[in-house]
Image (cartoon, rainbow, N blue to C red; front, top):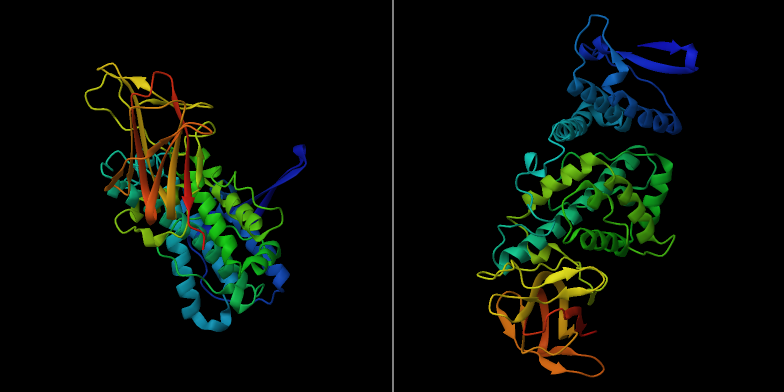
Length: 416
C-alpha cells in the first residue's frame, strides 16, 4: 500500500494499490492484537469499501465488487477466531460475501423505482397493493409488512450480537442470535465497538423493548408510500421514555433506517413475505382510537363504480373524511383498513350529523349495523355479543349530508 499527500490544503488522502488486492498474496500470518486494536481496525475497514480510494499502477479498471469483497474478507478475518480453524472462517466469510455482493446489486439498482429491484413489493403503500382486491389479500398484505419489520429488527440485532460476540465484548447469552422467519440479505450494519456492545448488554433480555420497536415501526410504515424518506422516519413518533430499553433500541434501529441499502433490502424482503405471511407472524396490536382530525392512519377510500367521483368521500387534513355527492344526488362516505386488535367488545364511529344508513364490515365477512347515539355527540356503536379479534374494518355511511365528516373511530377491548 502507499500514500499520497497534498500539502496545499494540509490534509492527507490515503490511496491503496488496487493491483495488490486484485491478485493478493494468499500466504497467512499470525498477528497478535489487543481487543481495542481489533475494534479500531474493524471500524477502519469501512474506508476500504470506497473504490475512489484505490489506484492501479498498471492502469487496471477499479472493480467495485473486488473492492467490496476484499474489505469484507478482511473485516471477517478480524472478527473470526483463528482457533476455530479454517472451516469456521470459511463459513463466516461465505455468508458475509453473499451479503456484500447482494448489497452491490441493490446499490446498482434504479434509485427512482422500487419495482426495478423489488418487483414483488407492493405498488401503492407499504401495507397495500392495487392487486389486493379482497379483504383477505389486504389482511395478508398487512401481515407481510409485520413479518418484514420483525425480521428486519431481528436481523439487525443478530448482526450486532454476532460482531460483538466475536470480539468478546458480550457474554454468550447476549450474543445468542434469534431465529429469523424471513431471511434478509443486503443490510449494511456497521459495528461501532463497545458503545453498541454495552447497549446490547442492557437490552439483551428486554423482550418488551424489541416488541415495542417492531410495533412502532410497523405503525410508522402502515399506509405510507414506499420512499426512503418514509422508511427513515418510521420510528420518529414512538414517544418512548428517555433512557428506556425501547428508546435505546429505537435509536439504534433508526440509525440503520437512514441507509439506502437497508431501505432497498427491506423492500425486497417485503415483497418476498407476501406469499407465506399470516396473522401468526405478528404480535403487534393496533391503536384503539383513530382521530381522523390528526391523521388518515392508512384508511383507504375505495373506488365507487359508476359514480362521478372516484371514491366515497374524501380525506381532508385536520378535518376527517368529508362526504361528497354522487350521480344520484345523495352524499356518502366509506373507508377501510386492516387492523390488529384483539378481544374487541365495542366499535364506535363519530360523525358530524346523523346519516340514513351506517354499516360496519369486519374481517372481510362480517357485516353489522350499529345503533345511533347523539349524547354527548353523534356516534354509531356496535356491541359484540362475544369479544372478537378484528383484522379488517370498513364503514359505509349513506346520506350524511354534503361537507359533514367522519372524524373518529374507537375500539373498546376486553381487559384481562
